[in-house]
Amino acid sequence: QVQLVESGGGLVQAGDSLRLSCAASGRTFSNYGMGWFRQAQGKERGFVAAISRSGGNTYYADSVKGRFTISRDNAKNTVSLQMNSLKPEDTAVYYCAVDELRLGVTNPKGYTYWGQGTQVTVSS
Image 1 (cartoon, helix red, strand yellow):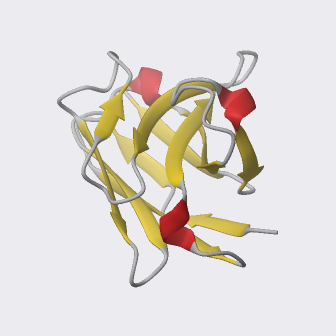
Image 2: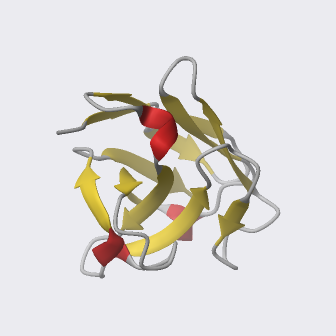
């Protein structure tokens, strides 16, 4: 079992920044790639960013590339998502997840453990 707890969401204005954090416990954190997904109201959950076990490889959705940065600290069992130049279309609930099945970083079916989510709202 893995427990994930996200934090850092909130209400901001367009152009502002937020940093989301995800604290993991329960298994050896460094054994797994990690990902961030988001789900806007009325839409399916979609891929945002992912990071490899060592942190050496990162992946981004086109919509956030150049604005968001994913990172991890294996000593602290945390993964973070730095979000800059936020836009109203970034409004969603953001989830971190464990890529246990390795079906492809953008495939949510490969992620077996999910946090409870944190709301990000960007006003125009």
